[in-house]
Structure formats: structure tokens, C-alpha cells
Image (cartoon, rainbow, N blue to C red):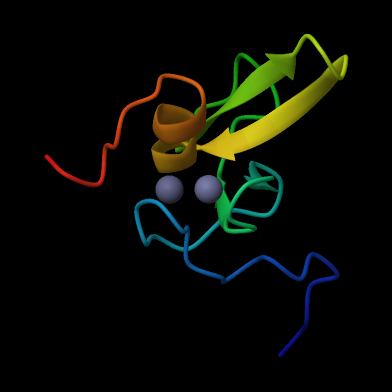
Length: 80
Ligand SMILES: [Zn+2]
Ligand SMILES: [Zn+2]
């Protein structure tokens, strides 16, 4: 048995609950949950969140889908 250096591998995605792949995941800035995120455009991988450019801070912020809806779109997506 080998252990990966990627500590998030095997952790369930905070959005969809599926296990995270080695590369294509990141951490939500709002809820600190780890979620699926394609690190390259061509990758066949899930996206369970978005990258958001904060124009005031001039930083890119990773947000999972529920937090993106809440903080950027102003929607509460937890209530269907
Ligand atoms: Zn996911
Ligand atoms: Zn989040």
C-alpha cells in the first residue's frame, strides 16, 4: 500500500461527494471544502466549482458551486 503526497486524494468532494482525483481539485476559499476542479481546459474532469476574479482584491478566488452561487450570484442554491 502506498500513500500519496496529495493529502486531498480520497477525500470526498464537498459538492458531489465523489472521491477526488490527484490533480483536478482545489479548496474553496469560503467553506474550506475540497471540490473537483479542472486544472487544465482539455482535461476530462469534473468541475464542482468556479474560479472567480475578485476585482477589488485583484486575486483569483476558488469557490465551490454552492458558495459561488451564494457569494457571487447572490443565490441560495442549497434550497432547490
Ligand atoms: Zn465533485
Ligand atoms: Zn464552498
